[in-house]
Image (cartoon, rainbow, N blue to C red; front, side):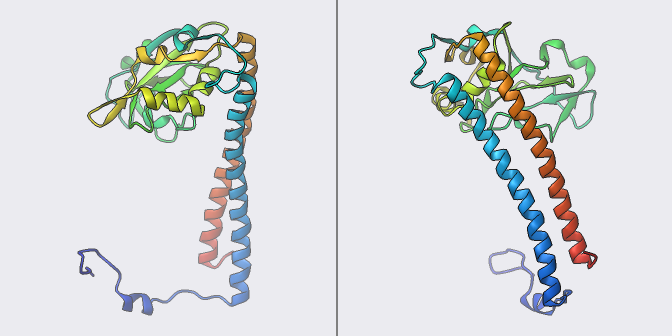
Length: 265
């Protein structure tokens, strides 16, 4: 049925006549209690993941201080001082099937993680080494909306992957920590800096590789950067475990819902 504004809608009479299973009130309460407990487990895992994300920023600020005020008086350089190389990604067209997965801008999250949920692929002969990432490489989203340009994450491996042209790969010099650079760019100060420097081109914001490498950054000692890197590794291992548990609880909740409506719970 079509309404007055051209929108399709279900007739009221159909809904009023629709028959649904109606177990006794005590049974409804029993089912609701089971689903509430399962949902509470999901909520606790999501809350714990959020707190770990906040912990990453807290550890960064505790170890290095607020980059805006630089209270620890670290010398100031640029990101390029910490990098061995800066390269653009591949312009090859990706497909749903292929030999080598390719990371694109949607695979980088605003929080600074790499999300492998929706991958595309390119052929092996097109996946040149200069367009591949290895463990410890920084990926920087150079073109996106103004709110999302500058998304930054560290690739942890181990699967060989390519990266697309809307990304910039930064490879650190020996003794420098990619997690420190990522932590800086994902800090409140870092995100504000990125939004202030991006240029808009046909509705998209852009920060090119040269501008990325020229971003001013405090330069703490290498050993402190490495300590931070170890802390990040521990926190992310814990986060990954909680994420797996959260996914498991999500599947469990869906299964319980199905069984509840099938009358087998």
